[in-house]
Amino acid sequence: MNAHRNPAEPTPGPDLNGRAVLVTGAAHGIGLACATRLAAAGARLHLADRDPEVERVAARLDGTAHVVDLADPVAAVEKLPADVDVLVNNAGVQHVAPLHEFPPETFRLIHRVMVEAPFLLIRRVLPHMYARGWGRVVNISSVHGLRASPFKAAYVSAKHALEGLSKVAALEGAPHGVTSNCVNPGYVRTALVEGQIEAQARAHGMPAEEVTQAVFLERTAVKRLVEPEEVAGMVAWLCTPGTACVTGASLTLDGGWTAR
Image 1 (cartoon, helix red, strand yellow):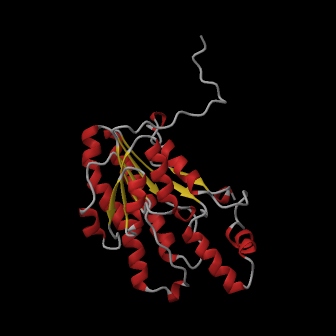
Image 2 (image 1 turned 45 degrees about the horizontal axis):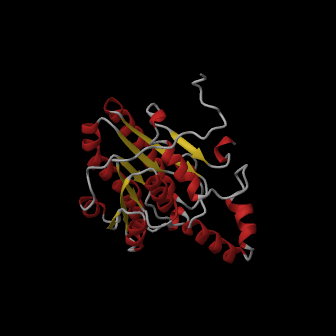
Image 3 (image 1 turned 30 degrees about the vertical axis):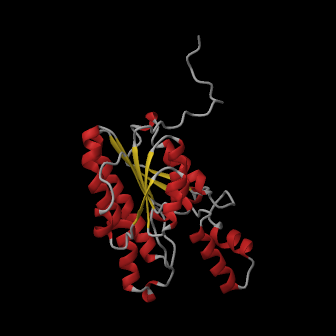
């Protein structure tokens, strides 16, 4: 009997029955897609977001909602569970402005949400993961964690910081069966990105589709936005048994942006 798997067969998905998963920014977009995908794998979900919509999402996915604002990361993280087996750091915000005009408080806000909060969450859940001898930290980074664009000083610097934090967690977690990785999508079809497209279209007097192709997808070989479900698929893959040696990595879903 041939024990080898047929390459045409789909790779087995994760089995997260009995595993507790915490997803931040879970009410919409990438976070919602991740929550939906991991729920299908049997995870016990903890879903965090400042938008009360997360309560409806949690009810639909048989999870637990946590309405918290990571803009106040210390207070928010204290309200979130520590006994977590899979942490998905996804929450993020964006602001676009020239560096010399960038509001300092907005810069600090973005770093609180996208660097300090992930740090505090990783710090909170690692003892449980270490005790179990298994854990997955998945940080939703960006192509902007690997490349820079003008007018995004806070976002780019925050994502670069998240990359470094993820690598430190990978090195420290390795002896305990804990992996830590970044998922680095290009522009994803989310409300945040669609809002940026609409703003650019108004500013330049161009149709939204023309802005998408000429501005947002100019650097990519695959000329379409990434779908949230594609990001969720990679997050789920990182929870499969065959990824124990995938750690400290930055996994791109950028349509070839960083290949240039």
